[in-house]
Length: 102
Image (cartoon, rainbow, N blue to C red; front, side, top):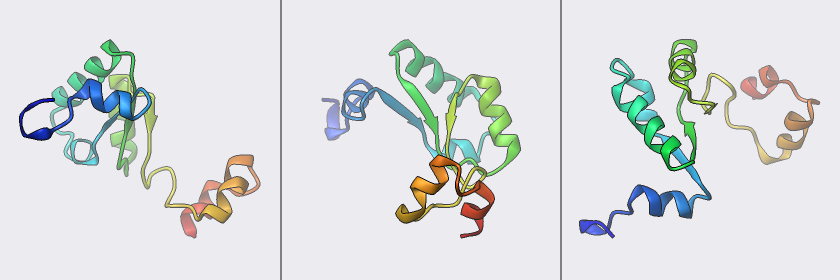
């Protein structure tokens, strides 16, 4: 393990089931996309799926798509959904607009 007890990317990926994430800090301040591009390339080289967190604007989503990020989450897509409404949302009985308003 690296000094200081921090988990390395490979160890973290194994713990998270082969998934990596781009923290919302990088998404929110994406003036320079070099770091996001590097994260996506590293994750791709390790065969990890990458999820961008904290996506709040269409511009952020477009930037991530242009960089090849396939998965994102954040208020742009939906506010947090109560567990009781999750099945209805996923089955199409509850629309995202209704989930956002809730």
